[in-house]
Length: 276
Image 1 (cartoon, rainbow, N blue to C red):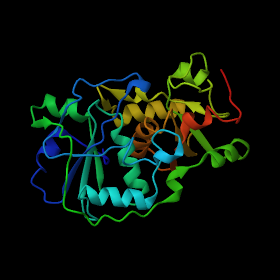
Image 2 (tube, rainbow, N blue to C red):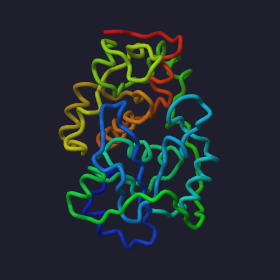
Image 3 (cartoon, rainbow, N blue to C red):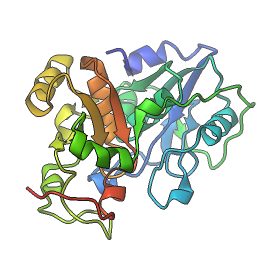
């Protein structure tokens, strides 16, 4: 698949002077996921902290997309250059790494792949890991961020889409959360989903921490998602929506975006909510 790289393929590129490996691991508790390797990282990797460093923490919402200026500055601190060949992974398998992949896509950097299966797959192949350091310092890079606005949707745009129905909202949360039959894991959130949204739980497109085959993905998307429609992916806080985006990018050729605020924003707003 064009956006994925296997552990074996990555191991063969370790001597590439332009290679940058990013560890984008995040706590998966809200999504019902956990890692067995919280303190390990691929040797030579650089920590890409989505929650704190690569988020607008002033927004009051988790994992909010940062400004281009902030993204550029923090990427340069990590030693990332305009010509960097980036590989991103996480320690759960395929959880938060697609968020980092999408962020780079939205900031105009296309030369990035996701390690299929993440750290567990890397370890299974017997490749080297090290303990995570408390701090890292690198020579400043020359990365330049160029925001592509079409890659991201605001709450106002999603509200307008309820009546226009020009795009389809695809919700990556589990069915019970989508239906509103269970409470949200984050306090203060209402239950249910955005009007007209369709549900494709992200776990349905994964197997052993990896994306299912293209044939399987095509079958799942054909069943769950209207064809030939612009897509807006949503979830709880903008993380697992990016897993769907990654998968869809392998099999579909339609405009796609992420509703950045996702349910963390919608679920505490006065916007309409549907329960199944």
